[in-house]
Structures are given as C-alpha cells and as structure tokens.
Amino acid sequence: MDSFLSGLTQIFTLTTLIYMLAGSIAGIIAAAIPGFTVTMAIVLTLPLTFSMEPLQDIAVMLSVYVGGYTGGLISAALLDIPGTPSSVATTFDAFPMARRGEAGRALSLGVWASFFGTFISTVVLIAAAPPLAISAVKLGPWEYFSLIVFALTIVASLVGSSVIRGMLAALIGLAISTVGTDPIMDRPSFDFGIEMLQAGLPFLIVLIGIFAISQLTSEVEDAKSVRSGTSLVAGAIDFQTWKVMKEALRRPVNLIRSSIVGVLIGALPGAGGSIANPVAYDQAKRASKTPEKFGKGIPDGVVASEVGNSAIAGGGLIPLIGLGIPGSAADAILMASLMVHGISVDPRLMLDHADFVYSMFIAMTVASLMMLAVSLVSMRAFLRVAATPKWVIVPVVMVCCVVGSFALNNRVTDLACWASSAWRATAARARLLAGSAGARRDPRPDLGNEPAPCADEKRRSDALRHPAHQPSLPCCGSHLDRLSDPQPSEKTKILSRGLVR
Image 1: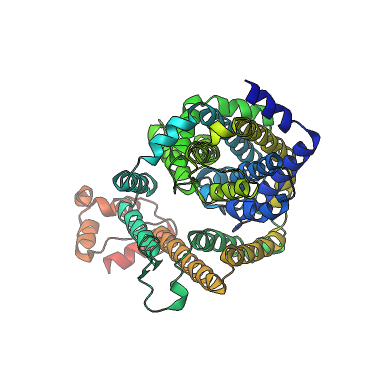
Image 2 (image 1 turned 45 degrees about the horizontal axis):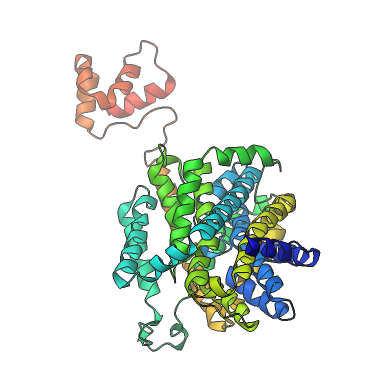
C-alpha cells in the first residue's frame, strides 16, 4: 500500500501531468500519419527525456505508447489507410461506416474501445503480471508455431465468397515474408542476388503501398468530383460521445473477449498488435450471430479490432516487468529508457523498485484517460480534415506516405518497394473493377423492351404457323403472345415479318 501511495504522489504532480499530456498528443498524431509507427514515435521521444527524472521519463514514454496504439484508428477510419500495422482490421468496418456518413460514430466507437481495451489490460497487468510472465516465457517453438498457424486460420473467415482467391493471397503474403535475410540463421533468403532485396520487404512499407496508394488513386479517378471539391467522407460532421460510449458498453462480451486476446498475444515476446488486431476481429466475427455484416460497417468489428489492438499496451508490459524481457520493439525502447536512468530491468524489478513499478501502473491508467480526453477533444478537428476537398487532402496524404516509408528505415530502396507494391495493388484493383463491370454488362442485343429472340429459326417459324404449339416454346413465349395480339404494334409487325422470312 505504501508503494502505491508513493507512486500516486509522484505521478500527480503538475510537471509530470503536463509532460504526459504532451506525450499523448504526440503519440496520437504520430500514429495517425501512415508510416509513423508506435515504435518510431517512442524512439523520437527518447532523446527528449534524458534530462527528466526516471519516473517522468517512463510516464512520458507510456503516454506516447498508449496514444500511439489509438492514433492509427484515425487514418484507418477516415482514409481507409491503416496508420500502423496494428490497425489493419480497423479499416474493415470503420471506413465503411465513415462512407455512410457516420464518421463521427466510427471514430467515437474506436476511441472508447481503445480506452476500454487499455484499461482492462492495465487491470490484468496489475493483477497477473508475475504469473503470466512466467507462463509466457515457457512457450517454445511448437507453441509459437501453433500461434502462427492459428493466426493463418483467420484467412478462412476473411476471404468472403472466393476461398481460392483468399488462400492464394495468403500464400503470396507468406512468400513475400520469406524474402530477405533470415532473422534466426542470418542467411540470405530468396534475394536472387539483388541488393535491394537483402533487407527484405518491410511489412509496413508493403502495407502502405497496398492500402494507401490504391485507395487514394481510386478517390481521384472521377475528375468531375475532384473539380467540384468533393470530400473523402460525405455527410454531416456529428458525433454523440456519451451515446456511443453506451453503445460500446452494451457489448461486454466483445470487450472482454477482445481484451483477453490482446493481453495474451501481447504477453508473448515477439508478438504484437499486428497479430492481436486481426485475431480479435476474427473471434468477434466467429461469435457473431450476423457474421455476414462484418466488413460492411458493423460496430462490433470496430470495437473488437480496436480493443484487441489497445490491449497490447498492457499485455506487452507483462514480460517486461515480470521477467525483464521486452514483448515488442516498443517495449525494448521502454526498457532502454529505464536502463539509461540506472534502473536494472530483470525479474527482481518488482522486488527492488516496487514503488517505481506501481508508479508505472498508475501512469498507464492516467495515460489511457489522457488519450481518451485528447482523442475526444481533437475528434472534431480530425473530422474537419476529412471534410477537406480531395484535391487538397490526397496530395498531402500521398506526401506523408512517401516520407513515412522513407523514414521507417532511412533507405531509398524502401521507396522502390513501396512504389512496386502500390503499382501492383492499383493494377489489381483496376482489373477487379473491370471484371465486375463486365459481369454486369448484358451481352444480349438491345431491342428496346423486346426480349432477344430465340436462336432456332425453324422452331420459331413453326410456332408462327401453328399457334397451338406456342406453350412448347417458353423461351419465345413473350414473342408469341405479342404476335397473336389482334392489334399488334409496329415494332411487333416488323419483328414478325423478319421471323417468318
């Protein structure tokens, strides 16, 4: 109890709270820009905290950490571009809701879901950090293999009506992931002697190319809508914060289930939000009574994906605090910031620095509250950005995508990878739309209101000579009805002469 009160006193100082507020804003904005990940935001923040006290340092880093897991929602909902890899599944339902004129509702649902996911994961972190950390570190190669296989089963629920197409896309994704230097054996794999491929194909770079560019180019295909100043998201800019909060709370099973998924996956060293986000979405779809509505703008999809994504924040700290093992790259940066201030991160962290660990728990809770407040206050401003005409917002977002793709690894070759994936995604989207348009086109000749005549001339002539046999020709029944009319129209007369001839 003394450690808890000591941590409470240290966190609730004016200076620390101001720093945490700035960290929350920075994390949300950084994650909302395509290409700027949570890890990148923490890395950029780290040098600014060297002169701070250890507790202020970790409090600011946790604020950026929590805010970053929420910021990806903004571009996912308004632009159909995942701001971070952990917000891919959020685009499935948040963007269709925004396109229906419910952008405010989509953002509010995502923000509240992120808050509840972070809060629930923090409670689990406080109560079960040591036992869960010990269990997570005992997992071996077979357990991780089983987790990956389980994650791949998500494809079965996301492919829609074409299973073959979905499995083919999954195999292509697996093939792309094998390119580059093997992270375990440190050997080149499928680089074909090309220097650019030795570093592999970064997941986020390919993600930006596939989602961002194909979506942005489709937005400017209609030159008339661009010249008229049409915005990306139509409809009135309106949201009802407390009504949406009640809507999220009316889904307690979804909230708890997705939080558990996020905490458990976050506790596994090496796993992260890019796995928890689609897994939570998949579990919500499987448990839903109306799975066919997922992908069309259903609230359950937004809640599940964002809760699972944000629950990683608490789950990732479980192995870090309990065993001194970072659960992700972002947790490794947090660990480095503690070591800079002389705090040894090992299994004795909770014994030797109990007051500091409890301060981290309190900082996580305060950071989630600040994230909620900043998101709700700035939501109207983000909606105003989405209401900007396409001819303004599309070039700006395109530039952000290019800068983010380069800044991720500071490699020019990543831009070539980004451009290649963008071109392929745009071409595939164009072929898909062309195929859909061709399937809808009627191949029959245009005869006004008259259906196309049957191909068998002899049977038609016989039917004209012997009206009693008309019922045996259902394909030409409508023609024969018109031909037997005592007062046929001019078009029917012309058609009948041609058939008899």
